Every structure is written in structure tokens, then in C-alpha cells.
Image 1 (cartoon, rainbow, N blue to C red):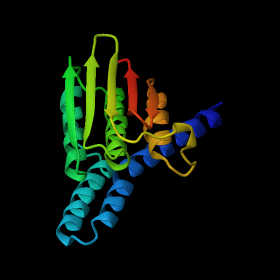
Image 2 (image 1 turned 180 degrees about the vertical axis):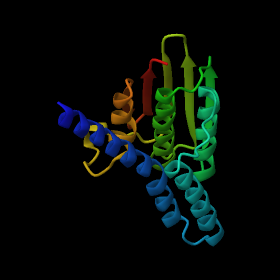
Image 3 (image 1 turned 90 degrees about the vertical axis):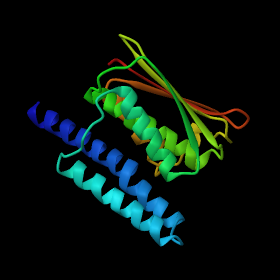
Image 4 (image 1 turned 60 degrees about the vertical axis):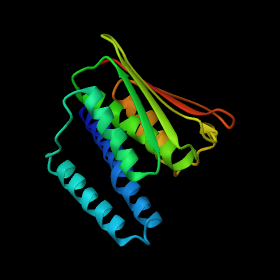
Length: 190
């Protein structure tokens, strides 16, 4: 039992590290590739990523105090990285618990995916924080995709959104259509 428990913990830790690296380092490397002709943008991205990675590695990350503040910060990061406007509406708020911090990371990944892949100029985010449940909806009116056809090697949807939410007691659903775009629904108990 002890060996099984230790392996499960190691597996969860590996999943957390893989999701974090995908959400941060790999995303930044992809941005650097697309902006390789702009040395100033590349240097800015590299410096920001270095600061974020060092803070994460050495436990010096300064979390936002509330769900609303963390969602606003994530939306700003996506706007800084991609040519898209993120329209955030938040009703209610909660102290940012570790589980809700993971919901924010999944939300940020959904926003980044919409910004990168949908072709939409605007990403809408609606968050509702009630006493017993937090729901966040990330929607674009872009080209849509087939969630079942995402290749195995693509980690964003599978690891950074779906599995992350499950690991932390929440759930995620994706509805996508070529005509109406994509909506990612995230739910979690605060």
C-alpha cells in the first residue's frame, strides 16, 4: 500500500510539473518561435519566463488573493502574449484556495488555446462564484475543433485543462462547433 501510494503521489507530481511546464515554458518557447524576427519581444518573453520559472521552482510565486484577481491576471497575460482581447465578467468571488488556483491555470490554458487556435479577436470569460460552486466559461466565436481528434502528443486540452481539473476535484467540459466556436466549462467546489 505504501509503495502504491508513493507511486500515485509521484505520478500526480509528474502530471503537475508537466502541466505547469506546458502552460509556461513550452507556451513561451512557441511564442518566441513566432516572434523570432522581433528581438525585443523575444528578450521580453524570455525574461518574463525566466522570472516565472524561478519563482515556481523556488516557491516564491506570489499568488493573487482572490479568484477574481487571479482570473484578471491570467486574462492580462493572455492579452500580453497574443493579439486578442479577453472580456472577463466575474460575479461573486472567493479566496484563492489551492484548488481554485488550479482552476485559474486551466482557465488560462483555455484562454491561450482560444487566442492561438480559434482565429477569433475576442475571448469571452464568464466566472460565477457561488457559496458551493465556482463555474467558469471560456468562449470564442472562432473556427472550433473536434476535441476527440486532438492528437495524443498535444497536452494543452488533455493535461492542462481536463486532467488538471479532475486531479483537483473539479470537472471540465468542452463543446466545440465549426460554426459557433468553442466553449470550455470549468466547475469546482471552492
